[in-house]
Length: 396
Image (cartoon, rainbow, N blue to C red):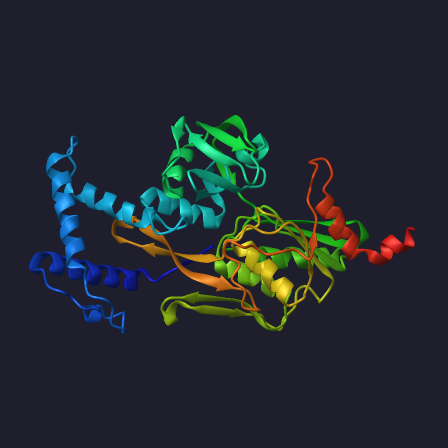
C-alpha cells in the first residue's frame, strides 16, 4: 500500500539535507535541525565521527576498488544501501522502477505477476496475481524463492529481486522455490500483465460475488459500477473476495470500504510527524444498500485488503471467512527524487477503526476455514452458507 508525497516539498527537503551533510563534512561543525525549515522540532546533532568514517570508506573505495566507479555511481550505491537496511518494504526506485510503479497502479506492466516480501535469507511469495504466468504455473502464497535466473536471492531486497524478475514480454525467467521442504523449479515467460482489479458475477441465491485482485487507482469506481449492475440483475446480498490480494493504494482501500459503510472511521495512519498522519471516514451514501455481507480473506490478503477487512470486522458490517491475513500494516510513501528516480519509504503504520495495528499479526476471520483441497473451495462454500441461511433451511 502506498501514498504519494509532494515532489516539490521532498525536493526542498532533499536539498536542505544535502547542504546540511556537506557543511558537516566540510567544516566539521555540528549542524542543528534548525537548518531544515520543514522540521520544527530540534533533533540530535550530526554524528561527526560517523560522517568521518563514511568519508574515509568512500575515499578508499573510490581510489582502490578493483573496478573504478564515478562519484555519481558511488553515491547511488550508498543511497541504495541506506534504504536497503531500513525495513523489508522500503526500497530505492530507479527510473525504470518508477515507470513500472506507475504502470502497476494503472493496471498494466510486464513481468510474471507475483507479489513478494523479503524474510530471512529468502523471498516469500505474498500472492500470485490472478491469471498471471506465476498463477498459471502454480506458484502459491507462502512459497519461498531461493534463486532467480540461477542467482541466489540471499541479501537482496525486493527492488533487486524485481530487477531480476521483470523484463520484456516473451522473455524467460527461472525460479527456484522451496515449498514445505520440497525444492521446485519453475520456468516462466514474462508477459504484459493487465490486471482487471474488479470482476463480478451473480451467483445462485441472489449473491453478488465481487472479486478484487488488487487495489488500483480506479478500483473504487469500478467496484461501485459493478455493484449497480448486480443490483439491477437482482442481487440482494454481497460476497467480497479479497483472497490473495496483495494490496495497493491507500485511497482505493478507503473507497472500497466506503462502499459498504455509511459512518465511522475506515482507517487511520500514524506517522512520526503529525502532518504525515491521516484519517479516512465513511460517507453516508451506501452503494451496498446495507445488505448482508461476507468477506473472504486468507494469508495472501495483505495491506490495503486488510484495511477493508479490518473496517468490516470492527464495524461488524460483515462476517470474515477464511484464514488469518498476511499482516502488513505499514504505509509506503512514493517520494520523487531528481532525474526521475524515487524512494518507496515506509512512513506510517495504519490502524483499524478500533485502533488495532495488525502489522506482523494479521486479521483473524470470524470463521476460520482452510482450503485443504484445490478441487473444492471450502471457504467460498462456508461464506455462501452464511449468506443463505434461510435457503439452507428450506432445502432441508
